[in-house]
Structures are given as C-alpha cells and as structure tokens.
Amino acid sequence: MLDTLLEIWGAIRRNKMRTIATGFAVASGIFLMIILQGASNGIIHTLEKNSGGLAFDVIQVWGGYTSLPYAGWKEGRRIRLDERDMIRATETMDDHVVGATADVSQGGLVAAVGGNYMSVSMQGVYPDYAEIEGMNITQGRFVNKIDMDEKRKVVVMSEDNAKNLFKDRISPIGRMVKIGNAQYKVVGLYESNSMWTDNNMYAPYTTVQTIYHKGRTINSITMKTKELETMEENEAFELQLRQAMSHMHDFDPEDKRAVWMSNSGTQNEQISMASAMLSTSFWVLGLLTLISGVVGVSNIMLIAVKERTHEFGIRKALGAKPRNIIGMVMMESVMITALFGYIGMLAGIGFCEVMDATVGNHMLDVGILQQEIFIDPTVDIATCVRATCIIIVAGALAGFFPARKAAKVKPIEALRG
Image (tube, rainbow, N blue to C red; front, side, top):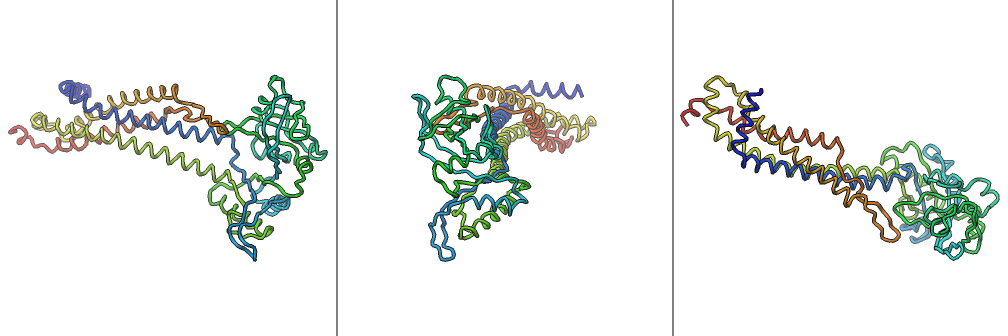
C-alpha cells in the first residue's frame, strides 16, 4: 500500500502544473459550495429567528368585506365580529380549540408622560391573551381577572415604548401615563418585537369596551389550537371555522374575504418548506459547480492514462491484474481531489467566518421595520462531513472511467506502442 502511495505521489510531482491546474477546478468548486451553504444558512437562520417568538398553534380571525353575493345580500358588505363568534368557536370546535380570546382596539391615541409624547393604539384584551399570543412579560404582570371585573385603568406596554415615554430610566411599573383623555397605571412591560416597531398598549377588555363605546363588536379573535399537525388539517379547520361563522353572519362559506384568517401553523409549514427548498437549491448549485471540477479531473486522468499506456502494459505483462490498475488510477484521482478539495473547503470556511464578522447579523432599520438579517452565515460540522463525502465520491467517479480504460489495455499492444 505504501509503495502504491509513493508511486502515485511521484506521478503527481512529475506533472506539477497539470496537477495544480486540475486541483484548482476542484478547490474552486468546493469553495463555492461552502460559501453557498453559508449564505443559505444565513438566510434560513434569519427566517428562524424572526419567527422564533411566534406561537405555531395560533389562529387569528378578523372581519372583512364580502366578495360574493349570498342569500339576497350583495357583495361588499362589512362583516363585524362580535362576542358570539368567540363563544361559538370555543364551544362548538373544542376538539381543536384549547382557548379563545377576543380584543377590541382604538387607534389614533396619544400617550404622554411629562413632555414626552408618542402615537399609540389601545388594545382591550382578556387575561389569557398574553399566553395565547406567546408574549414575554419582562417586568410586572399582564392584565388579570380583577382588572377585567373592576374595569381598572391599567396598561401593559412594550419595553421600547417605556424607554420613549419614561426617559428618566426609572422603572415605569406603578407610574401613570396619559392615553387620550384618561390616566392609566403601568402594571407591566413586554419584550419588544425585533421585527416591528410595536406601539400597541394593552388594557383590560372591559375597560376599553366601556371607555370607547365598543358594545359587543370585537376587532379580532385569537384561538390556541391543538392536534393540527399538517397543512391539510389546518386548512380543514379553517374551512370548518369559516362555515360556522357564515351561518351567523350570512355570507358564502367559500368567501375567504368575508373573514380574514392568519394561521401560524400553516405559516410555519410554509417557512419550513421554503427553508428546505432554499437549502436544497444551494446544494444543487454547489454540486453543479463541483461537477465542472470533477470533469476536469477526469479529462486529465484520461490524458495521464494515455501517456502511461506503455507502463500499464509492462505491469500487466508482469502479472498485474485489472483491479490493480483500476485501484492505482482511482487512488491517484482521489488523492488529487481530496487534497485540493480540503484546501477549497478550508478556504470556504474561512471566507464564511469573514462574512459573518463583516456583514453577518446586520440590523435592517427602515422606520417601522427593524429586522436582523443574514444571521450566522457559517457552516456546521455536518456540512463539512457531507462535503468530505462528496469530495471522496467525486474523486472516485473522476478516476473510474480513466481507470476502466487503463484496465482494458492489452500488454502486447501497449508494449508495441
């Protein structure tokens, strides 16, 4: 085995320029494959992080406008949800609904503390709203049942809102803030969303309902679901829910614009599918790039086999079997491919680290949207292992056809040539 390796190393050294030119194609192919995988991971990690705070078992429903005539009604009619929709969803669809909560909203309000002002939207919610929506309360507490029963003027705001209104950096818990024409006590802070500038403030449902004369009309319904694992199950549930609401509000059950639904379960499925397709696409692009290098190695090996025809004839005349010739040629191909493949892989990993240090984890800020993009554009050990396997397989494939041709050389013809 050692003699074979020394022979292969000698053959490589005798053709330095040809070997380097061949290896460069392989190295560049692996290099581009690693970079593409790093870029793919940066995009996928961005999708995962910016959806990481979302609960993937929540469906939110809003009233819309009908787009189809139904039972004598013309299209374009406004559908307003009310408390009956929440009760019906909880009672009649309990196989898949863990809990449901409603909210009412009042926009266009100004919150003021001293000389600090900002425009906000007041959301009236139930105590279980924070759990269903997956809100992270960082200080104080959320709205509770006593707040609801006594219609207390208490409010929960985001950490960013607290920094903008209470610039003295003293904890706002227990302090007063004027919202519209009413004074509210701050009882809690929630973690700000990294993607959006969130100006929502949350108060008891009954408080907002009474102050702003909302009656029984609600803004939206948020439901926490269970046992909806697939896209098909989520879509079937949405259809069942839309049919139930159509009976109460007299609209066509097929009219998707009558009520709008946001299903985090289907959104999660779509994100997962998009991530898988993106990763696969980059792997395919990398493999296509690598194939060009493999073809180059194969062509060079064919030339090498032709040049060494006399040598192979002597080997076979001395008793070398076809498998010995094939093994030697394929090992030479694998050595060239592996050596330069690892050089390309290490260069690609280094480039990804530089890319992570320079443009990775960049914060995009366009006013209302604040989003961290291109998060951790590097490759993991699993990618390196796969790349290693690809290098070995590519080297073996590149050497197989030239090796088969070498094995078919007849000693008499080789010695005569």
